[in-house]
Image (cartoon, rainbow, N blue to C red):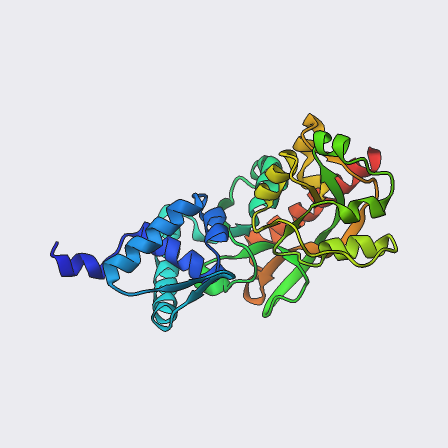
Length: 305
C-alpha cells in the first residue's frame, strides 16, 4: 500500500474514536462509550490528525469543538461507519428479521439490564440481540439501531417513548467521609464538597429545594462518567447525589453509605424508545413487552424490601 493510499484509508479504530468524540463532544464520554481509556481515545484522534495533516478538533477549557474541516469529515465518517456496522450485523446474522439491535446506557445496561437478559434469551431464543452503547439522542437509521434505552424526557423526535421507571436519588458518601463530616440535618451538606454529574447540572439544587433549602453552590468536582462519580465518592472526595438502584453493590459492600435518608425523584426517567418505523417490528414488540414485565417485577422487589 502506498503512502497516499494509507493516508486515504485510516484504521477503523481511529475513525471510530474520532466519530464518537465528534458526536459526544467529549473525549471522556467517547472513552466510556467505546470501553477505552481517555488516553487511548486521545492517541487515536491525534494519530488521525497527524495522518491526515488536518486539525479536526479545537481543545478548549470547556471541552472539544470540531473545526470546519473536522465537521465535514465527521459527517462522511459517521455515515460510512454506520454502513459498515449495518453490513457487519447482516453478515453475522442469518435471520435478519429475528435480530434486535439495541442501544443501551453504559451503567444502566451493565448494572440493571444485563443481569436480566438471560431471562429474555430463554423466553425468545429465536431473537438475536446485538448491543451498542449510546449516550443521548442519536439517529436510529444512521446507526442501524432498532431500539434504545434512554434517560431523560419522552421527547425523542420521530420515535415512540415507552415509560419504564423513575429514578430516585439520594446523597451518598464514603463511611470515612461521613465519620469526619457528621450530617445531622440536610443543611449540613450545604457546606461540604459536592460531587456533580456534568449531564445533570441541576440535580443538587433540585434535592435541596425539596428540603426547603436554597443557595446551593455549583462549586465542586464535576464528572462526565457515572463510574467516576462512584469511585470519587468511595475515595472520600465528597458527597454525591446518585440513583440508589445503580449502586446496590457499593451500598451492600459498605464502600458507599447514604449521607441523608431523604430521596427525591429525579427530573429524568428511563424510557424504551423505538423509531416510529419499528414500533410494530416483532423483536421490538417482544423486547418491550418483556422489559415492562421486568420493571414491574423489580418494583415488586423494592416494595418487598
